[in-house]
Image 1 (cartoon, rainbow, N blue to C red):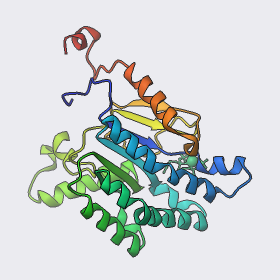
Image 2: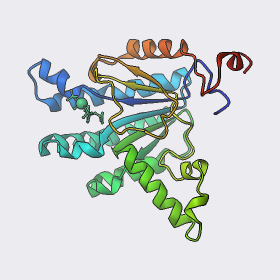
Image 3: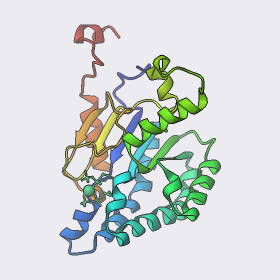
Length: 243
Ligand code: IPE
Ligand code: IPE
Ligand code: MG
């Protein structure tokens, strides 16, 4: 439990950005238009979270399961990611944003991998906010890769000695606090293999608003809701009152 886990402002917000396809289909447009509209709003969201003092924002952009979508939709999503890194990263970097990409990036086209790496290196010392983009990410993948990396780093260690803290050191989110507030837009109430380990004690905020419509007022609404939650982490209320 980190020092300000009980704070009314989340340190770490994670968002499942769902509903782009339905947003476009409601307007009789191709699903890809919804993805473009959804991506266009991300920059303002990151900047406003940084202004509010939120230190970590993690966005689910593409799941390990999303490869099963039609090929043209998958390539549009890849293209948007490249465009985003090309167009918006300069402004975000200037605003103090540190970019990190988590997920199995080796599965991406080489050009995209190069751009991701360049953007991560260029922003590694920025401190206003850490923007983590989960791409080709799955919570189950993350736990398995952590176990493999732990073993590679400790070849002679007995797995019986492995602790939760040690394994967490090999998760893709190493160095970040656990998720305080997990938001899912688009009406579904499920995790869809996002940050399974890191969201163990997250407050879950589900909204019917589709991702392209999730604006500043919606963020404020989620933050207000979060501020009213009582987080107990297994304790009882009387103990929390003393913290
Ligand atoms: C979320 O929107 C974006 C990705 C999964 C990449 P969807 O594309 O899932 O939109 P809906 O859920 O079909 O409306
Ligand atoms: C979750 O949305 C993944 C992302 C937002 C990237 P999905 O649209 O893929 O989730 P399901 O399939 O409805 O669970
Ligand atoms: Mg969806």
